[in-house]
Length: 192
Length: 192
Image (cartoon, rainbow over all chains, first blue to last red; front, side, top):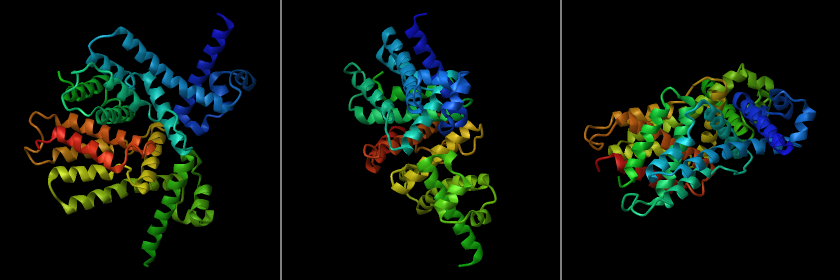
């Protein structure tokens, strides 16, 4: 494996160790020392990949977005009817698989930390994604008289609300249930 | 003021100091020592009102629910058309006033802490409230063929999603905007 690839791969492994620590203990507990331990590295080795804790946390947060973005890009590349593509994309940001639950819980914790520190990285991502997705639909796809911006705000709130509830009630909000709710919602705004 | 009332009032003041600390620094930083400082009490005086940190945090969390519950009860007592009452109740759990923003951010942080510690106090409150509110509507209020449970799940997700987004984007999700979105949503499930 080329050295550069190995370096990047190791950075991702460290970010994933960071996720696990944040998920179980919270962001405040995610010190460089504990992350090194979780990743099975010495503190010196960790410093080789991330000079500061800030850099490590920022990379770990960006990796959550990046992973979701990759899954979404794959769906767009596969193509299909607009409503189906939209549904599949929205399902990708919901924590219906165990691995996404980890990402989602880490994401919410990053959001709350951003709120406390009055920064706003990423806090409007879901809304902006929903707005772009609805605006780019072919003409005549949505029902007549639909207010696209309002529907984007409603859809974004629904998605993040479902994601939040699914974290706590995975037995109630199964993948099938999340899909049923989303399909129903899209039916109310799509022509057919 | 009777002694018992004074004792209870002081407990609430300490809980509010706890909220401020949690909101700005996170739950992990809400130590008994820091809370005492924020509340302007000695550690010994604080111990008089709360024997343990656990008791203090639990009381602080329950006070968030209790405050929202009080506001909701007032609305029910005022009465009115079912749709208007439902709208007013839902608006009460959204952080459109500065004081509710503090409560809401504290609530989300308690939720994430509950997630990490695998407890589930309060994590399904909004859903259960929505279910009860929709189930108790007079017959013929909702559109024909409505699946009440599914609508309760959708409404609960919308509410928590809007609450979450309004925390980060108060300038986008103003009180008027939140109301517009909710009215639109209710229009899609009510007969008229």
